[in-house]
Length: 375
Image (cartoon, rainbow, N blue to C red; front, side, top):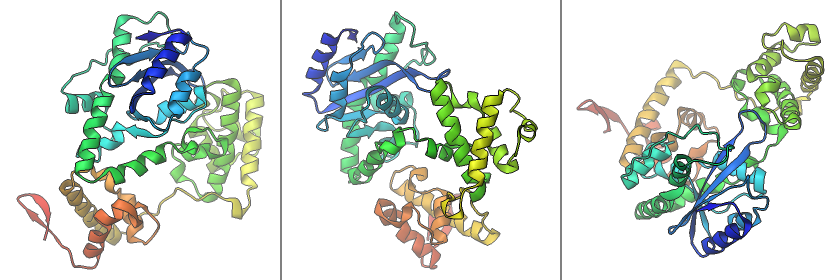
């Protein structure tokens, strides 16, 4: 069903409100803009699929109300960008949600599994992805685009039921639901300029003082990009910002000696320099925590290797993706008694107590038939 009129949308939303599950996906473009342009909303219950055209519809309030209905579980696959787009376009963060990509890692499938691979695994259906790079702003949409869009939500209600049944049989719903709740934190979908530096590439090379400079430079770039509605990289690249944080140019001449600044006009260059100066003036108490991680000593690296081997065994025994259980950085933090995800919750119950046994010498590892096993 292709919806282009308000009465059609209202009627679909009224029917969907009686269902316990609503599958959602979006098509949008943002290659040349700061704000993503919502081009299509796909929604499915266990009985029908609707393609909602936000380009043809000025009023999407019935669908916004449906997203806000907390009696309906909204099912996505890899939801982060969809949530950002829906919040920016409709002003609503859907709750509660269920992300099938997250859930897949809890039932023995790999982490960050693609939608097509998951549909094939759980439903036995191979999906064609020929329209993955379509121009969704162009109208009318052709039949291939419509079928592609429908397939993106058609199987989600069935996969949701399958996954919930598997998770319940393994007593893991209590593990998964907090992971889902973290995804709908408004801080994850809102664009806060002061937090933009957290997504800066190569920022792990920066000291706390340099990170304070990056914070101001990224916040300035975010505001300029939003004002001009252009991609942030079109204002200035991540690489240039990181280099500015290392060199801290004091004037336009010094700034121009950094490769990649030649396209900046005088106004933009002056704005960047002001941001760098503001960051340089940050007080010690206001410096952000550095992402730079100490390099483990050879002895510590060896201990982490053993801890990771144990983590892989525990993950395999419990049919869960090892990356979801703990990263090497998590293990390093746990070894150094720094706060980390292993300190509480299901990760602590499943893994931390065994790690304690390994570190205390009460648990050992051996190799049998070419595989690492517990002694």
